Image 1 (cartoon, rainbow, N blue to C red):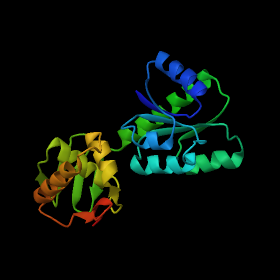
Image 2 (cartoon, rainbow, N blue to C red; image 1 turned 90 degrees about the horizontal axis):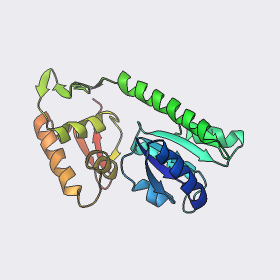
Image 3 (cartoon, rainbow, N blue to C red; image 1 turned 30 degrees about the horizontal axis):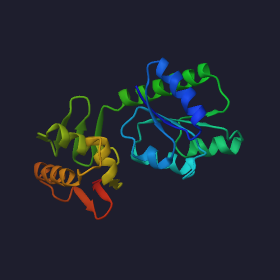
Length: 218
């Protein structure tokens, strides 16, 4: 499992990273919010809320907007009740106050990942107007007509359908589908054009200039 560890205290990061690796996790370290947002796809984010370049709550909201499915645990010295409430409302799945034992953190990781796995199993299909997306079989129907899509086209449609009616930023689509934002913008545009052609409805996937794409909800 890939874990993004966002921690600016190098002593804490070194100890925590070593403990996680001993337990078999692949650890991607980040000491700033800027590093965190370019880290690529992960399964879990361990997020310190006291960062040198940005408030951790704001970063938590951004991570959650970019990926509704990723597990986030706030790991922070902020111990007041209002801080815990703010962290959970910002999108964290759990909240651990420093100092903590590795046994407690491990238990919380396991609990959060079980909840995430159950939620993923529960989501088997998406329906947006006349569009139906079968996530397990990776098949798509529009107005009862099956639409044959490539793997990347399906991934693109799924990402848009999960947030139908909401603009999904280009950077998030590129990172989620191609795991990069480097020189991939043209690739995204080509796949959007191909998807529109196969859906035979150019207005179903809307372009929001300068931001990204949105799947029309109906």
